[in-house]
Length: 204
Image (tube, rainbow, N blue to C red):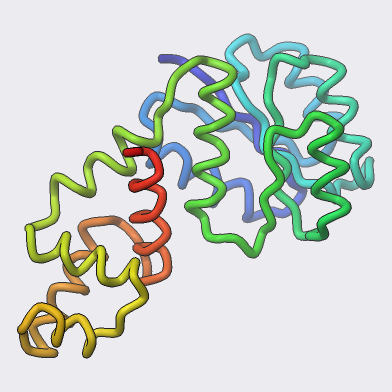
C-alpha cells in the first residue's frame, strides 16, 4: 500500500511527533507537513496518494472551520481529521456537520488520534490498519498472566488489587505490569486500558 497523510499544523514540533507516531504504527504510510492553509492547498493539488489529512484549526492564514471547508471543497474524497486545542461541543458538532471525519482534542491520548486516522483510512483506501498492528501484535506478545493483568488494569484495579485477585505478590505484579507496558508499546496504565478497550471493541 502507498498512501500519504498530510499534517497541517503551524507548531514546529507537533507535526513531527504525530508523523513519527503514525509511521511507526501504520506500515507503508508516509506523512508530510504543511504549516499553513496555503501550503495545504498546494499539496492537495499535486499529491496523488493523499489518503487523509490531520488539520489544526489555528493556522496563520485561516481561523476556525474555514480551512476545513476549503480542503473539503478541493478534494471531498480525502477525509479530514480535525486535531485541535479548541475543544468544545458546539465546535465538534459544527466540524462534523462541515464534513470532518472526526474531531480529536489535543488533550486526548495519542491512541485516540491513531484510531481516528485508522477510521479515516478505512473510508479513503478501504483498509483497516489499526487492528493487525496495534491490536493483533499486543495479544500475541503477552504471556497469559500479563493478559490477565492487562484486563485487570482495564477494569480499573490497582497493583494491590491485581495481586489479591490472582494470588501473586505485589512485587511480581509490578514486574508484570512494567513488562506488559513495554510489550504493548504504551507509556502508562491509562494508555494500556484504552488499548484493551479498543481491542475488545474491534473483536466484537
